Structure formats: C-alpha cells, structure tokens
Image (cartoon, rainbow, N blue to C red; front, top):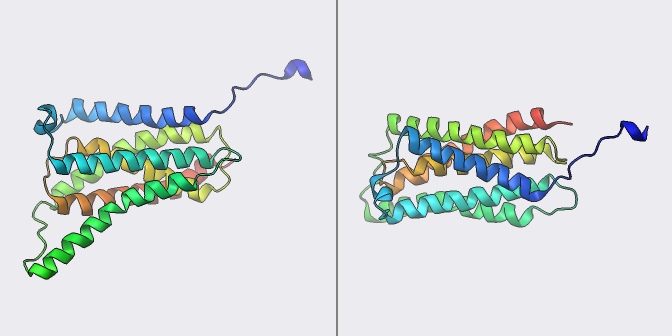
Length: 206
C-alpha cells in the first residue's frame, strides 16, 4: 500500500496569490498589445482620475484575491481581506453618491455624456474577457484547495477577477469622466461576480 502512495505538493497561500497576479499581468500585457494604453500613461503623466480609478481597482482586486485564497485554506481568516476589498470597491458608489448630491445641490444635472451604449459595451466586453482569464487561474488553484463556502468563493472570485480585469481595461479606457468610472466600472465588476457565483461552485465542488 505504501508503495502506491505518491507525494503531493503542499498547497501554499503564495501560490494562489501568484496565480491571480500573474494572470492579471498577462491580461494587462494583452490589453497593451491589442489596444494600447492611454497616451498620458505612456507619457508618464497620467491624470489624477486615471491614477485613482486604476489604483482602487488594483488594490481592491488584490485584497479580494487574498480573501479568496485565505478562504480556501483550513484555519485561515479571510475577513480582513474581504472587508478591505469591499471598502475599496465601495468608493465607486460613494463617488456616484457625491456626484449625484452635487448635481442636486447645483441643479445642473448629472452628465453622462461619455456613458454611451458603445463605450459601456466596450468596457464590459474587454473587462469581462480579462476577468475570465484571471478567474480561470484562480479557479485552477481553488480546485486543489478546500473552500468550505462555495457560494462565497464564487462571489469573491468574481469580484476579484472583475476588479483586476477592469483594472487592465482602465489602462486603455479613453474616458476622462468620473461619472463613467463610478457607474460602468462597478457594473462590470458586479456582472463578473454574478457570473462567477453561478459557475465557480459547480466547477470547484469536491
């Protein structure tokens, strides 16, 4: 019986994080190759909005990725990472609330000139394609792990992949509108999370 046993590599937290971040680097490179990056980024002088939106997406995605990995390892607590990622993503609806409040107070109306059907569709398609690659890498790692709450693993995987995929898109996104960032970006992340919630539990189930 002993002769039939084969050694198994121990599952390490760092491997799951590396898988997600490596996939993120891959989709960032793919966006640069297929679509290019914004001119201000290439010039080394990105606008404050680009820095803010991309930074939030990257940090939130990394925190939620950590939550996914922690939640799939016995004895690890993912609450701090979940809260950090959720709070960071919460800045988008907070920004929308602030914009709406300013529009109401000034009675000027909230401008959604850049939030057109074509621009929103482009954001969804590119962000979700990038998220699919990141989610695939994370799910491949999850299948070797032992997540006890598959529904939560689905939500977190989708939110993490959605944030990181949207981060990749944001480096190309030509929009300079805060209204676009606080409406279309979170909508793309939410869609990625919903799809992941439906698919991941079926794929990871063990």
